[in-house]
Structure formats: structure tokens, C-alpha cells
Image 1: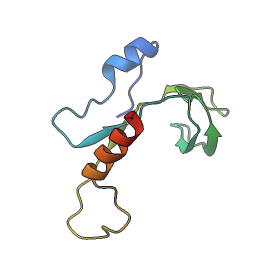
Image 2: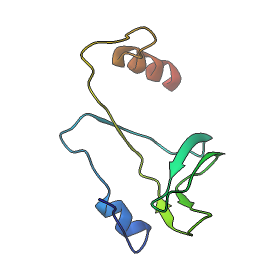
Image 3: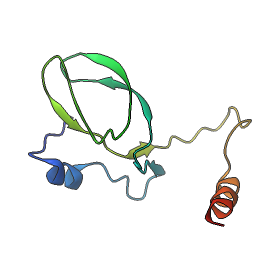
Image 4: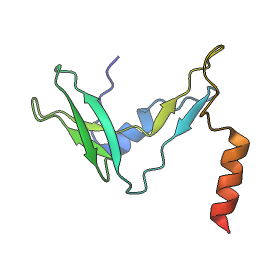
Length: 98
């Protein structure tokens, strides 16, 4: 289902919240993002940019708010090497806060 909002404020209210579901939240802090983008018109591209709160399709002109939620999908088997464990993340955060 494609969601349509009149403006950023309305888009914020109707975005998927993932309440009660595993998820992450991208905290946009003006850092560079590398993202593949796909529009409803079929256009797709790749962007490397700062401050990607909204994007506009150069083909059809549609403007999208970039939702900060990231879906987490549980895996039963697979790689655990290179996987950031939450306790390590907590440790990194504590070191950063010093």
C-alpha cells in the first residue's frame, strides 16, 4: 500500500511505527547516507548525500518523506560473525559519552 500525505507533519503521523515489533530508528544527524531509492513510477537510482529527510523523483516529481524506521527481521540460522551485539553497542555508547 502506498501512503500519501499532504505534508511532512501528516507523513510523520501515518508512517509505520513498528510498535511492539523489532525495529531500529535511524537518527538523522546530518551524516552522509548511501541509499538505493525506488519510486512508484518505476524509476530507481542511488544517492549519496547529507540531510536526506525528503527525496524527489526526477522522473515524475513525486516527493517522499524518508521514514527513519528500519525493519528488523529475525533469522534463525546464519552469520553471527561481524554482528554487533547490543551489549557491545551499549559499551560503545558509554565510551562515546565520556
